[in-house]
Amino acid sequence: MMLHTGFKHPVDDAQRNFRALLEALSRPLQPRALPTLPPALPGLAAGTVALLYTLADQDVAVWLPDLPADTLATLRFHTGMTLAASPLAADFIVIPTGRALPALDALPAGEAEYPDRAATLIIETGAFHQCDVEASGPGIAAPLRFGAQGLPKDFWRQWQVNHARYPLGVDALLVADGVIAGLPRSVSVKEG
Image 1 (cartoon, one colour):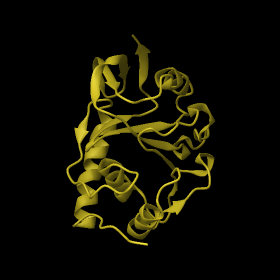
Image 2: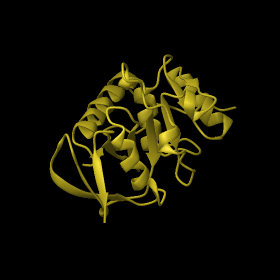
Image 3: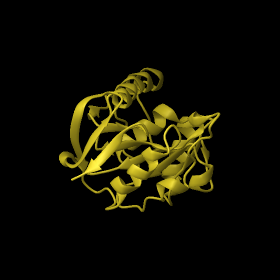
């Protein structure tokens, strides 16, 4: 088994990416470039790897689909994260390009007393564009158009159901190469 390299400057690179991540979540569906990208790992895009190196640690459970052993070992080495046995036991759920998305309403959505215990999805997509939905909500000054290639056909319908559970529900980070778009559960979308 071979371990792959991570960030060149782990603390500084993670801090820069974390600031970009906070900006992406505070201004939903307004794509932001990640300032520091590590090398991609087999089965995962560089942007996804950067988010995991930034967010995962020994207190975090991450669900990943079947990936090469080198990828899993590298992630565990650089982050200390625990691999969750199922999406239902995960803090972060990673959906690489072309992989099936679990039903959003079946994922950990938090509890009334602890809505922060909801899962966050990291979903790899193709390029972002402006034609799938109209989004509104906190952090969006005026309704905006957004879309992403490669999302499942029913993703936006599922998101409407997810948003209806607010303040419960899952959050999502959409990743297109080294660019991310935050999608907190507070965002409402209309198709068309």
